[in-house]
Image (cartoon, rainbow, N blue to C red; front, side, top):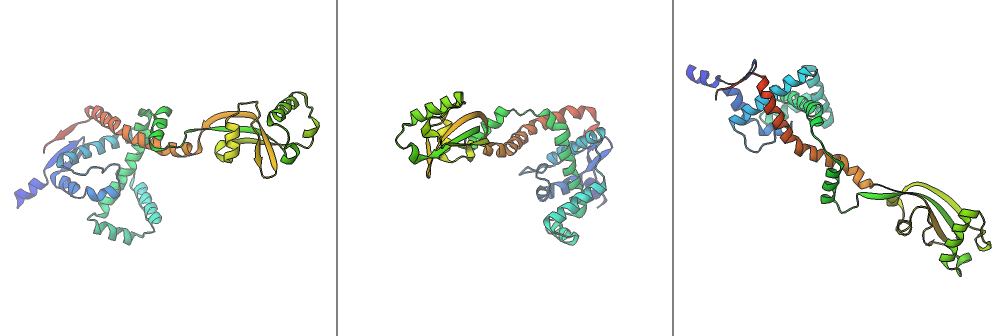
Length: 289
């Protein structure tokens, strides 16, 4: 019995003054899947071995030492605040949480320390790893084009809408009207048949927010040109393109942060692996499995 206890309490890994016993490693392996719901970023493997538990242990303390070095040390009060925030968000009290943990085979202390580890890992990603991961606009655009058929770019306009009752110009060719409107822009003089024409400035409008009739008309026109005639109800419109710029589409802008995060998640795995490997030489690490 005493021999069995010694085997279970055998230290199988050390990082500086921190140690991992065989019993702790076996417990960590048996609860690994249950910790996925608490910290899926860290506990993300389908199958886990004792060697992987040791690697996780070493990685945890190297990250912790680095955070302490740059002024981040997560104390118990911060962990408790995070747990209370989670309880509030999920509408749980402490008894509910303890009951949930028990049903999932976890102790409160294990949950507490996993929460601490998760906070540390997120700070580590933001402060240490993120500056090392380069993501270009072209990478984001390329990824967007693989998941969406919508255009990534759209036009943004400043338009001057010249409009008149369409009956008053029904017998006049639109080419003549556009020619006379261009002359008006230069001379300020309108022919008699256009005396009742009115205009309205439309600033900073995206083509995504224009009706299909107007969008098709102005998209085919260049800056400082009039669009073809657009009839809407009783009015005929001629849109002068005062400004026309290519900008990112609204859908693309909305999706950029999520796409960037996906690219970061993928790239950061190799960066973290390399970073941990390089930092191992700075610490006393022993393994005795």
